Image 1 (cartoon, one colour):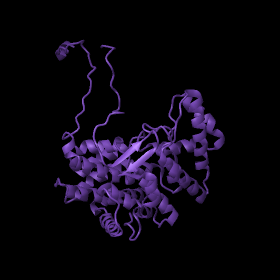
Image 2: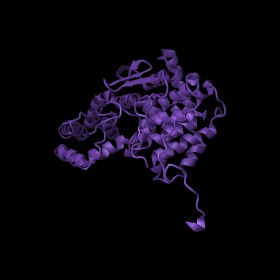
Image 3: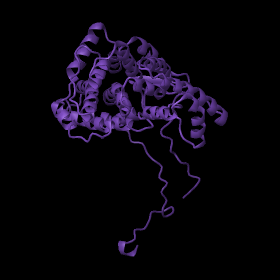
Image 4: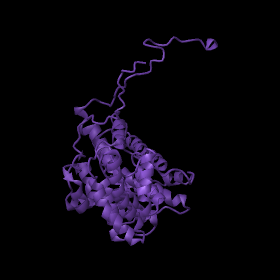
Length: 392
């Protein structure tokens, strides 16, 4: 093999593969915008439903438009009885993200628009998915714990309704607002791994459910949506502030990651983490578990200091760092952290599928078809000669 041949394992970092009007991330200065709006302004002022409307329809809704949109989501939020019956046949230890991926695919069987390839039909499919993913996940958690699923609660917002279906009680207003903000912060993030997976599948003109099922599969990996689970497991393993510095030294010496620190895009602290941090502190105080936030802050300080001293580099917190303790103190099961991410990111996935198939169709090739550089010179510069089976 020619050892001078360059290896092109770039992970597509730094390559721009399409144009988009949906969002932008400037990792050098920690700036995120959805359709031109700073994510900090949306998190502080808008509801998740407003953000979904913005991502799908390119503008913030009026009061009348928002009321109609909320009603539409509420009408679509119940999942088919056949899907509930199917969930009851699944092993109780099945991974929630696998359940969600299967549930998304099964929803396609019940959608009258699945054979239509129009912007209107694709948007309707997307709205049904946005409305129903929380119900699928909440139903699964209750089923695996021997309980009957709950219907969505009338009059509750999207975030509050999910918590009600999951926990069987209406959340307090502050808790519901924290969940709403968390969903807004996770709703969209340009061409991340799961969004690119959705767009790649959508580029073949597959329907919305196929594209979103692919995105769910991508999100299930611990290097993408699963990182917040690893953050919480890390906090539990550390156990106390006194053990933080030794833990960081130990992990760096072993060449392991400190989950929640570092990001492929950001050269400063992730602005979403800065919004989540005070909510994580407040929730910890509410439920008498302030230690998780306190350990997180100590880990942040120690991690940054030791990385700088040992490796000469600056490292920054990402969105997973504080969402972990926030979700944990909300009473969300550990293996549901990534599914909650999906409840939010479905908004971005749907917007990107619509853009890929319709809004940007004239600006790019029909489908994504990258190339690779072959380095498998097993028989030298020429092809191998086939040897009959009895002579090998």
